[in-house]
Image 1 (cartoon, rainbow, N blue to C red):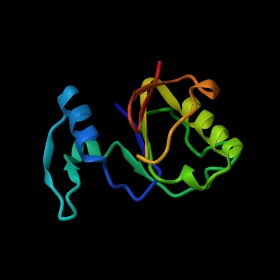
Image 2: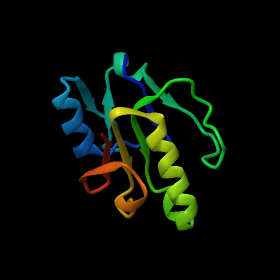
Image 3: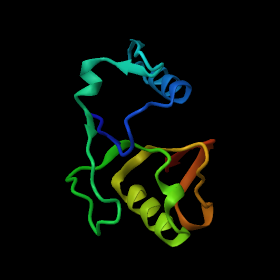
Image 4: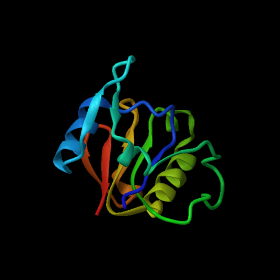
Length: 125
């Protein structure tokens, strides 16, 4: 069972998500009114929508995730804080898991083990 954490307003990045879901044979069920994709309940049941403080020492999750969405959040953080959060995300992902960030954000490759996939998408090896 795959687990997904979404840390923003739960808006999916349409093209990137579509490609990821199609490569993994997930079914997409139409588009919502705001133009974002809505996925089948089977997958939605594995998604955790939760508000919590990214600055907490330990995140309140007992299992690791396969995908984390954190869009347009870290742009407000100082570099040191941003790097701490990125490394917490890295530790919360399963190997091969993906981190999706906002298009205006980037991750310095020198401070993390994430591999760049495409703009806004990083993968844990």
